[in-house]
Each structure stands twice: as structure tokens, then as C-alpha cells.
Image (tube, rainbow, N blue to C red; front, side, top):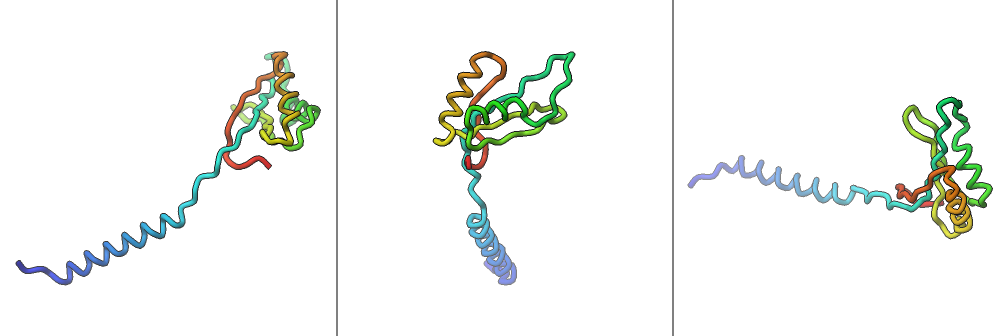
Length: 121
């Protein structure tokens, strides 16, 4: 059997390149951000005859601040999305969490537990 040395050299070079790319890409690829728990407070939708308040998270943000939230995040109204206020579930927000859950029992707004990328501040 006769082997073509030139072809074998290129085959070995390709295998070595593949190995190097695999090792480098494994070292460079980042782990996904951990998911952190949040209490999500949905802004109440306005009645069909009312105009909505375009102030960002006006109800949820205000209610969470009144409940003593130390940190919170808000999202703006979008074309097809509702505005939300997010309360990070941390030790410093424990009292605000209890207050928000009690206030949601009245049915004026919805709350739910969600997980978001990043870590609560």
C-alpha cells in the first residue's frame, strides 16, 4: 500500500486545528447567568373606557416602595406587553414581600414568582 505523505500531513494539520479550536472554545464559553427569584407585580390593565397611565410601573412600583422595598426593578409599557415591577427576593425585602402578597389578596393586581437572569442587588 502506498500512502500520499502530503495528504497525511494535511489530514494531521486539520485534526490538530480541530483539537485546538475545541479546547479554546471550551475555555472561552461562559456559563449562563444564574437565575434569581423575583416577585413580579403586574400593572392593572385600564378599563376599556379609561386611558392607561403611562408612568412606568406606577401602581406596582409605588405599592412596593410603600411596602418598604429596598430594591426593585421595573419595565415600561410596550406595544404588546404589560408593565411590571419586580421585587428581588432577598432578605432585605422580606417585609416588602409579605406586604405585597397581603395586598394582592384584594385582587386589584396580580403577583407571581418568576426567575430572571442575573442576581438581585
